[in-house]
Length: 305
Image (cartoon, rainbow, N blue to C red; front, side, top):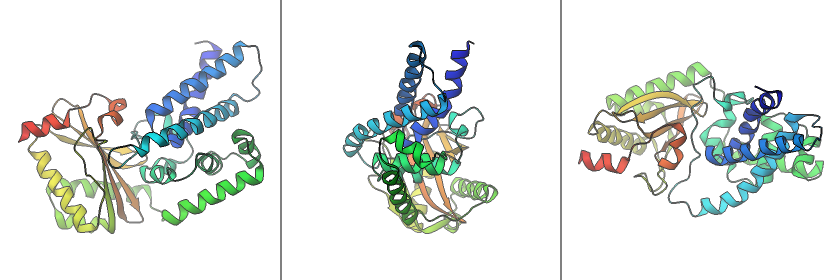
């Protein structure tokens, strides 16, 4: 491996960590990463010196992601049903996302919340609070004054904190809740499930119009628990379906796979304090292809009937 190749290899996870959090999409983030690394390569080819390659790639990645986010918003307004980010599996040790400083900033719930910010607010908040950039650096990256950047970050922070109060949960407690949740669901234990759910828990399904999913989110402990039990009964009629617990976006979750180990969907739990406050179910095949072969859920359900 040449020095150039090694440098680009080292910069890839830096770029991906920013791009994915900005966009909530693996495919869009990878496009941004490719373009950012190409610009590094072209700059060096032109004989220019890059004093800090990490700062250079962060700047290019953020600017590209801001542009991509503007066009992505128009697409998401036309999206069929509820929109959830493309999930990433964070259990493995070679995932690019693990190079980022804060696992919490990967959660599906937070990424959904960031969708309501302007692209510049999102950039200012992530660069400052997650990636530890100073306001002078951020101002240069987004092309605004330092005062403006401080205001953008402050507004974004208030918005997030109002809608997502932070309650500390230890990793052990979080993992234990995840184990109990999947055990209760598998056993069809309605009371056991309800005991783990917050009274205003929200269940969101993302099929993107390409796979059967909830038309709109369900709220409430009893409604969500009953919907989950119904899903378990339905899954039991599908041939050789299994649930494989994994860490999804830094939180407990699971892959649902068929008998040929093709992916049917991804479940991700959002845990606040000692309760499950949100459950995301992603079955849109377009959002799962980066994780491996994907099953045709419609065909599986038809065969089960």
